[in-house]
Amino acid sequence: MPGISKTILVTGATGGIGLAVCSRLAKAGNSLVLAARDSSKLQTLRAQLSNTCPGTHSWISVDMTRDDSVTEFAEKLTASTVILDGVVLMPPQDPPTNDPLPSSDKWREIFQNSFVGPLSLLKAAIATMQPDPAKGRRSKIVIISGISSAQVMGHYASSNVLRCAWLAEAKTLAFALGERGIHVNTLSLGGTLTPGYAASLEQRAATAGTTVAQRLAEETSNVPLRKYGTPDEVAVAVEGLLSAFSDHMTGINVLHDGGFIRAY
Ligand SMILES: NC(=O)c1ccc[n+]([C@@H]2O[C@H](COP(=O)([O-])OP(=O)(O)OC[C@H]3O[C@@H](n4cnc5c(N)ncnc54)[C@H](OP(=O)(O)O)[C@@H]3O)[C@@H](O)[C@H]2O)c1
Figure (tube, rainbow, N blue to C red):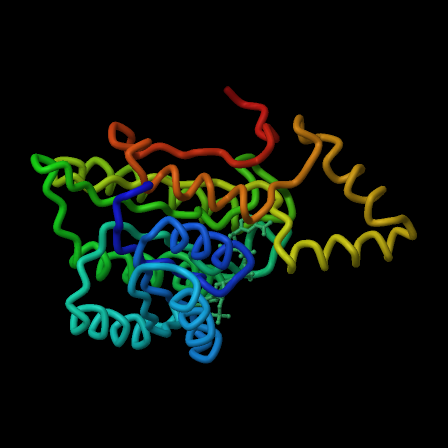
């Protein structure tokens, strides 16, 4: 988006992927509204961005899994009178599980945390958008669908289901909001070497008694590009989906997985 400053809400702003996304979007001149639970991390990030990048940056803490917290977030967002041009939504997700039939209570919890809560936040964000396609003003939503793979994986049992829920919701929203100039696309990530994922890779290498390089080569042997993605690469893709690149694209799912998915 060179030369055009936009205001973008980034959830999960302080995480491995969020930090790279915020850094890239802020360096490009955008103003950011940062969201996550930990206020002190948000405050630190806002200060860093304000010291090093143009744009006006703010933060609102929120626990996306809790209705009361999302309601408070929505009130603060409305009170701030910010007009959002974009949203990068990263729904929280439970740790991987290989249980395809969790209890009904567990399913309710999973859906609340990873779908209902984040969707309610997205609704509040959409309410602030004022697109005007006739004047070239489009609003863009990028949902990082929160799931590691676009194909069924046994150890991501509930994630497989949630991912489809997000793809279906994005498609439905794209259909409903397209006329207003609001675009909704999802970005499905394969393994991405955030600090957290790199630490788990190191742990797996130690458990297997191999080097990290060996373990990485083994784990990515079924990825055509023979590597995991990086947070910076995700940030480039997010920036693209928020930019004019997607002016005639909505309701699509972009796979950012090194070619891991076999379907076409
Ligand atoms: N890394 C990968 O390989 C990979 C692959 C596929 C998909 N993904 C998805 O990409 C997204 C970001 O991943 P990441 O690796 O950057 O994760 P991360 O480093 O754990 O960061 C998570 C971010 O979300 C915030 N967050 C967590 N729970 C929250 C909640 N209940 N309400 C509001 N904010 C919350 C965290 O801040 P607070 O703790 O302060 O709230 C943090 O900013 C996630 O949806 C993840 O599932 C990652």
